[in-house]
Image (cartoon, rainbow, N blue to C red):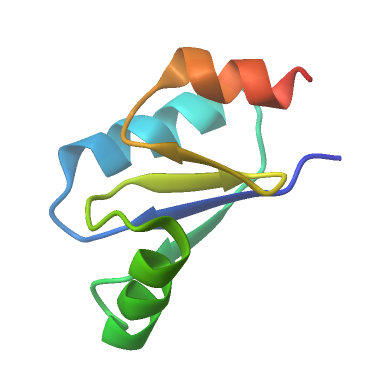
Length: 77
């Protein structure tokens, strides 16, 4: 079973795209909105060194931005 968490903000078009992509692929995921929780945003930056969203953690691996090919490659490992 894959563990997928998508870190998002309210006004990010790529966040919407990645959530729709995962739904289309029937991939269950947890969404964490870092805009509503600045402390989580700090933790995310510390973990990945990246400030942008979406950031997706899949089974401990990180994908920055909307990158369906990389997401599917990790999910299919």
